[in-house]
Length: 285
Figure 1: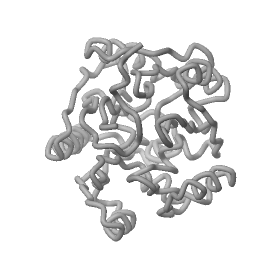
Figure 2 (figure 1 turned 60 degrees about the horizontal axis):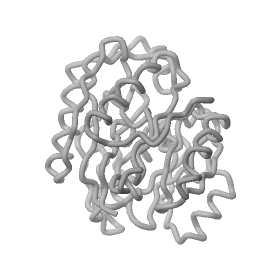
Figure 3 (figure 1 turned 90 degrees about the vertical axis):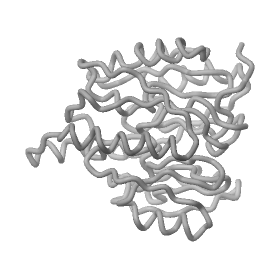
């Protein structure tokens, strides 16, 4: 097994990430956000998508994070949401399984990329569906994983079979499917601080967070589909969010966190924000 040096937690200083440019993006009716965009007759302006993604890449680099880019595939229009192909833990990468046919095949390309980077693959989901947007490390030995629209209970049980022998406890958190992924409604942004759509959370999960001493920055249910929770902890009391997320950004600043907020508007219409676009490869323990 690997030497446990990849991702131990959600808030250590982020050192290295994997991203994908939206060169071949197209709107697909696979989430509530994009179905609304298509109903309005909109089409993506790829020049704007690329500019916004370039700003995201530059924000990471300016924050001292190494950015690795995977080559986008013309037949896979949603590769920009790099988070979803799996999860990175201390021992290496767990490769997931996509539910939506339009995303199937991304996992193979991303798996090949992390292997080429020398990162071990500790397992692959071989039953059910499992996407990385649902994955959270509450601490170095506790995983909570959403069962929302893209991960099902069979996929979660498969993940338990792979991760529990490595010493992890894996617990499912079921939300209404309109929330898409757990990271759309819940996000750990700093030690003991989370952005959370409290109205969407099961009571047992809220109790568990409060027992652990989490301070919750509350987001409305409407804010879920506006990506108000879908932001990225950089560590060192810094958070990468986006300029339009003003209310959450103000609350983060009030807690003494540094806010990095590039202009991202159009790319959000695909159904994912900065967290969805980011696959962490290395964090300080």
